Amino acid sequence: QVQLVESGGGLVQSGGSLRLSCAASTRTFSLYTMGWFRQAPGNERDFVAGISRSGDSTYYANSVKGRFTISRDNAKNTVYLQMNSLKPEDTAVYYCAARLWTAGESTIPDEYRYWGQGTQVTVSS
Figure 1 (tube, rainbow, N blue to C red):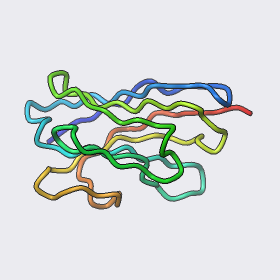
Figure 2: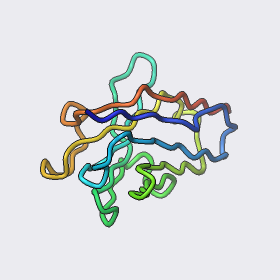
Figure 3: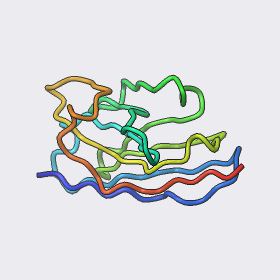
Figure 4: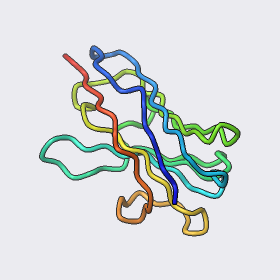
């Protein structure tokens, strides 16, 4: 069982930045591919960014490419999402998720086994 706890959400003006963190309660954090997803009211949960277990491979949704950066620190059991040049359409609840590295990379929410409780990000215009 892996527990994930997100933090760092909040209210920011358009063009601003936020850094989300996701702390994992497992000694085997380095065995997990990690992802960030987001869900706005009335919408499905969408993929935002993913990172391999070692951190040497990252991938992004087209809507955030060039603005968001995913990274991880396996010594701290934490994955991060640096969000720059935020737009009102980035407003959503952001979730981190984990899946075993043997399952490969994925952008599909149902293919991630463990989820955090989410953190709200609101971008005002």
